[in-house]
Length: 228
Image 1 (tube, rainbow, N blue to C red):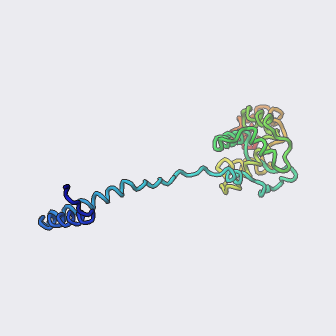
Image 2: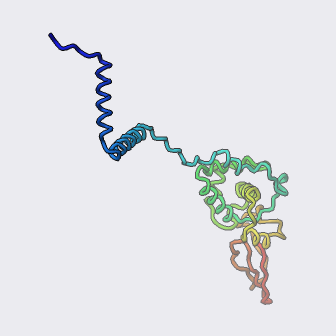
């Protein structure tokens, strides 16, 4: 006759009692070390299971195009003489060409065509476009292109931009005012090759400097600096 099976609960209780008896017989330091190792394994398992937090993106967003448009918006600035197309000009043609080149370099998205549109959008300006602005840029000389509408209008544009940006007058600008101030500004009405100075035999004048200033030499030995 097979042995009679004990109930399941009775077996588990007897095994648990036997296990407790064995644990009680172990030294205390062994029990403490076992419990500590068990806690460390549980903690390590939880840390491994914890998903890593996504890193925050610190990349700065590029400046909005609206900000640049605001910087280049000159509608709030009016120059003396602007309404009658008589703003006094205190830049030479070469100076304006340099300003245009510097502007295009500082604003890579701008082209001669887009700059021409900006200039042409100014009030009291007469038909500035990429073609006549390009023709002006192709010239060289302090007064080459002085009667061009592109030259006059570009001066107005950059003078307004200087005021908008709060920049002081440059050394060249102050020197131009000294040379051309009593003439009402730089010559924008007479083409360079049509200009001349009447002098006596034996007298002459020097080649104009970058500001358009020349020195007259008289027979008496005297000299005089004048805008030309």
